Length: 248
Image (cartoon, rainbow, N blue to C red; front, side, top):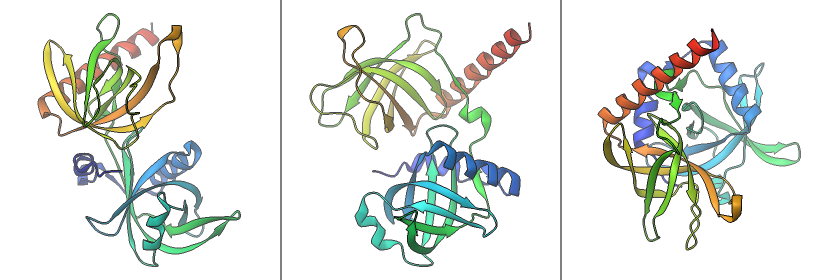
C-alpha cells in the first residue's frame, strides 16, 4: 500500500478539524458499523504503512479497539506510546490521530487498544459530493497502468476526490487495492484530462452478458484545482436538482 500524500494534505487541515464529542462518537461508530478498512501509518511521517479495521469503541474508557495490522509484519511497530495516523477515503474522507496503548486479545483474536482521538478530520460535504455524469451511456475513461495493459470503461459517479468506475476486467495483471495508476484519461464538460490516481477498492469480477466487468473506486492524485472545482459545482447542481425533484 502506498501513501496518498495528496489526500492527506487535503484532509488533515484546520478547516476539516472537528472536536465536538458528538461528531467524533458518530464518526467512529459509523466506521465500526461499516467495517471499513482504514489506512494506518505507524510512527511519524515516513513511518510504516498498513491497514486495519476499527472493531469497537470504548466510550467510557475513552479508548478504541483496532484490529491487528495487515501486513502482519507491521505489528512489531505497535509499541506502547507509538503514534498512529488513521484515515479512510472510501465514502466521506475521514481521519484521526491516536497513540498505541497496548496489544491484547479481544474476543480471542489479536487486537490493539488505542487512545480516543481529541479530534477527527472530515472532508467538507462539498468536497465529498458525488454525481452521475450527464453523458448518455456513461462517461468513457481509460486507465493507464504501470507495467500492464490499459483498461477501458466508464464512470459510475464522480467527485472532487475521485471516481467510481466500471471497467473491462484486465486479462493480464489484476488490479489491486493501493495500486498507483499512471493516469486516468477522461473528458469532463468538454475538456480532456489525464489525472494520476490510486486504487482505493476493487470488487470481484462479474460476467454480465458474458463480458468480464469489474467495479472499482480510485482517488485522484494531484488533480488540477480547476477540475476539482468544476466537479464540485456540477455535483452541487445535481444535488440541488434532486432536492427540488423530491419536493415536487
